[in-house]
Image 1: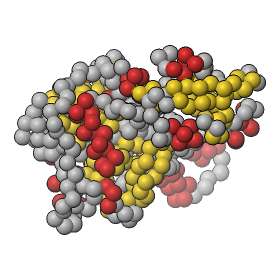
Image 2: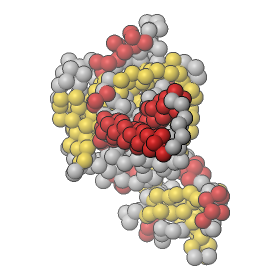
Image 3: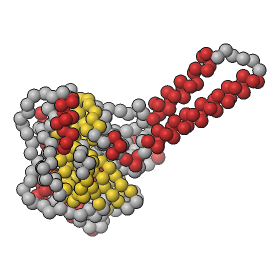
Image 4: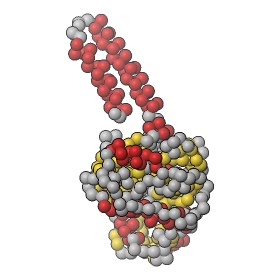
Length: 410
């Protein structure tokens, strides 16, 4: 039950009983009693609300601030810096890979799924100056490799991993990839129980889906929720970056980030990464998303091999889109605008600046950040992308050489 639901229920229950069971009386004495009763109701309801708020403090969530439309992650930059360089790094290149099993032994009950998976689920705590974030992770090797979300550790200076048996270890960063919101950590431990990973490409809408994690922090660690696979190959725009995800109605909340989405065989088929929220209401439910393991495996393997993912083209800019409705409301022009330009990029050298509106890229009209990402697909670092932009009423043509995204992660 949500806090507001609980508050409304208590308020209505206490309010309705006196009015329904007590006969009306004339005179000021009755009105005084009612006024006193209403005041008592308000005080009692406020006390209930305060107790609930204290118990479910956001300090146990992935981030200390609320996001307007996506609870997890808060922001994934477009061609931006990784933001995790302050974490101590682990050695790379030991040959470890994430293994996907094509074999399963038959459908499990929910209880059996939990018993199979829970030894492999960990709590990830990342510390930064004056704050901390808590998420979930999955063990995928007996010698201490942990898979989680990049946004869980973003900006941290130290990370710890707590196992189900309460043992806690300092964690080193093997590598992280902001584009797919994945990170690999390493702890100095042996004899761990790795999760079994399944082939996410075999999922169908309607399949059973189970999530395990730490919703709202460690106080509720090891929580399991269940539902179905609501959609597959769902394209979701996250801060200007397109992610192709699994959609599920299994309940996800801040703190579930980095935890496993499991199939009916107890295999990890996704890494939970976000849920959708409304900017205007808190009633949006059952819209959670996970990174498919088929997408995660090559990223994880490359992070273990070299600590980074190379070969991705980047402009070195961040952009935002103003829709037609927003443009009408704010009396401006719809389109894609440059928010920032990294000074290390060729885009900066070529003259692209914050505030420019991108009209086209390689002669393709640009109406959203998705359009710009599609133009970049199939291109490689070193290729040229020609941008036509509008600046102060003047159209400019700016050719930009794409760079390797790792340039902006150093």
